[in-house]
Image (cartoon, rainbow, N blue to C red; front, top):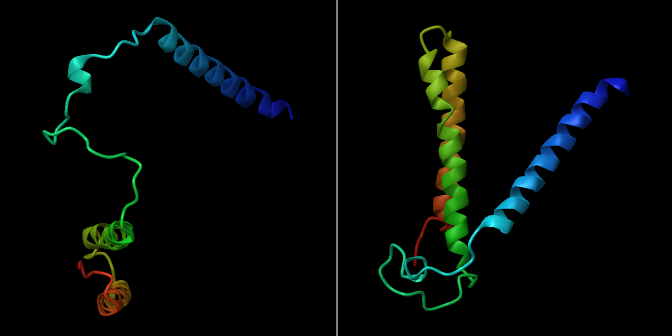
Length: 117
């Protein structure tokens, strides 16, 4: 247990410093509204509804699909960097990976997950 004392001290000091800085920012900051701060932001018009409104599930589905396929394609970059050092097994392993990725993409396409009505 003696080995954990420096780690616990580090966490305690970090927590104390974080709370101190957070508290000081509330004590010394000005809380009055600025007209520039309340004006319309980048869109150019005033907001007309609550920001916590419901969104269609298609937004989330497209975002999740993009993240999945984007992360899987990111495996191609390290593979391409060491392609000359890989033997035939490494090449065909990536081809199988890309085929599985393509089958998944075609499946999502067939199910209509990529259609925007």
